[in-house]
Length: 384
Ligand SMILES: *Cc1c(COP(=O)(O)O)cnc(C)c1O
Image 1 (cartoon, rainbow, N blue to C red):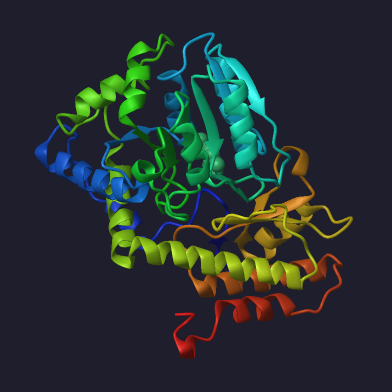
Image 2 (cartoon, rainbow, N blue to C red; image 1 turned 135 degrees about the vertical axis):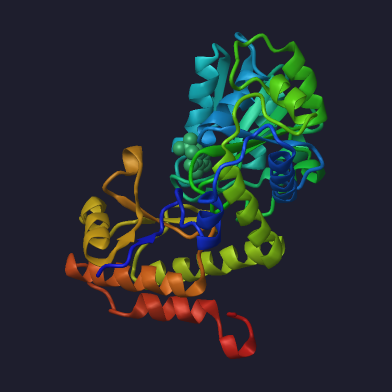
C-alpha cells in the first residue's frame, strides 16, 4: 500500500468534510435552498478577501477570474501596466495583450519581489495607465509582493490595482477594502481547500465606473451580468452547485479555525520547510518567500524532474516542478490549505530519502530535525 500526499501549490488536498459535501445529491440552482448555500459561501469569501463588496463566484479555474479582471476593465488601446517576475505574473501581460491593450511591463527578476520604488516610478511615468496588475503570491518562484504598500500608491492615482491573490488568499492576510485594492481574484483549488473549477473576483466601487466604460468584448465573464444576477442571489448561468457546496464547507472550516490562526499556521509550516531545506544545504528561489509554497533550487547537477518522479512513485509524495526556465532546476513544495504540522514531516522526511537515493550528500535527518525545531516545543503550546 502506498498512501498518497498532494503537496502541490494547486490543486491542494481537500478535507473529507468538503468531499462529502460535494457528494450530496444535486438540488436545482434556481431555488431558495441553493441561494442560501451560495449566500453563506459568499459571506465566507468576503471574510477571506476582507471586503464588504460582493465577491462573485465564476465557474472556471483561477485564470477565468483573471480574464474577467482584464476583459471588464481594459479596452483595446488602453495602457495597462503589469509586474513581471514569474509564470503567473506574466499571465497578466498575456491577457492584456489578448485584449489588444498597450501593455507596459514592470520587469522583475524571477525570485525577486516587486518593489515600492518600481511602482512609484511606473506610476509617475505612466499616469495615464488604466490599471496595474500584480501578483501577491507568485506560485512559480514563491516570491511575495507587499500588496498593501502597492495599493497605498495606486489608491492616490487613477490607476486601478488588480491583484492575483490566487495562492495568497487563505494563506496571507488580504484586506481588500482597507488597503484600497480595486480588483482581486482567487481560486478554489489553493488555500480554499476545494477542488479546481471555481474562481472568485471582488471589485471596488471605483472600478465599476471603468467596467461601464469598457468596450472589450465579454459574455460569459461579464461582471455586469454577475452583479445583476447576484442582486437576486443567483448566477447568470448554471452555478457549479457541488463545488459551491464544498466551498461553503471549506470556508466554514476556515472560520472555525479562525482566519488569523489559519494565516499563523501557514507561516509556521512555511518556516519549518524553509529551515529544513536550508539544513539540507539547498537554497530558496525567492528572496522574500510566501507562506503557501516553497520553491527550492535542486542540488547542483541534479535533474529535479527525476527527484519529483521518485518522490511520487516510491513515497507517494507529489510535489511540483519548476516552470519554464526553472524546469529541471527547481522543485516546489506546496503547503497551503488542508495541511498540518505532521504533514510537513512526511514531506521533508520523504524528500530527504529521495535526495539521498539520488546521490545528494548531506546530514541525513537534518531536514526533519530542523523542521521539528522550527515547529517549536509543543509542551510550551507553541507548536500545537
Ligand atoms: C494557480 C494559479 C493561477 C491560476 O491558475 P488556474 O490553473 O487557472 O487555476 C493564477 N495565479 C497564481 C499565482 C496561481 O498560483
